[in-house]
Amino acid sequence: MLVTVIGRGHSGTRAMSQTLSESGVYMGEPLNTSWDLLPPQDMYEACRVFGKYVRYTGNMKWDFSRVMAMDPDPVFVKLIESYLKSVLTSDRDKKGWKIPETTLVYPWIRKMFPKAYYIHWVRDPRDCILKKHMTDDLNDFGIEYDKTEDVRRNRAISWYYQRELVRSTPVAQREIHIRFEDMIFKQDETLKRLEQFLHIPMAKIPMRTDSVGRYKTDEEVHMFDFFKKDMEECGYDF
Image (cartoon, rainbow, N blue to C red; front, top):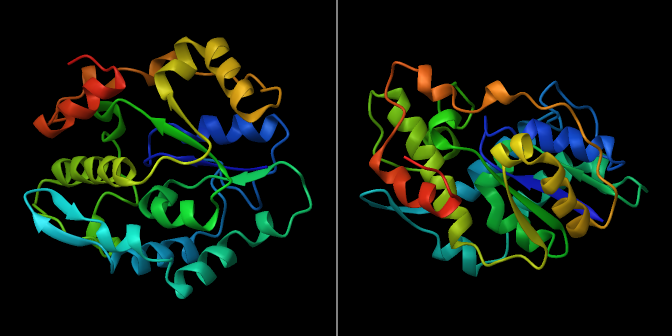
């Protein structure tokens, strides 16, 4: 079994990676304190290779037709295989990885690993964009967009872009959608869903309730109109 987590940085994917690890899933090595597989450089470069095939058409719309139609670039494949070496060469029967940048290349990861188990992870974007993350500026990964001097807006666009990319990707053979907030307030129910999905017993890790709703004490802009459709789809009130 091969499993990975698809979710933007600061969406709480650490909790899912730790849960998988403590449930007996080998998550590669070494790992950092966020339970990301390291070193990340080959993954970052793979994102830039992918980005060359995405065309920005303006007004927060991207054309993903090339990446959806073509096989992954051979350079991309080599970079991913290098990044995942500890996972792919492991003889463990349950293994996987987590790093937020996987979301930036999800369509080609799906093509490389069609039988993998994909855990789609989402967090209220108002909480998700409060802190700086490597993926805040899409230009760093070769993705064009209407960049501004407003760091929060750039960060919000990155969140939106990643939702659009995942939404445009055909449904995987094996995928499940989990909300960060449900792992906190409905942890037993969520773990049961994961057990049915992965067919393994799931460990229960401590979760902090104060991780939810942090935007309520934030004094900067954290809500954007283009969040609304996804928030409704994911069950978030606004």
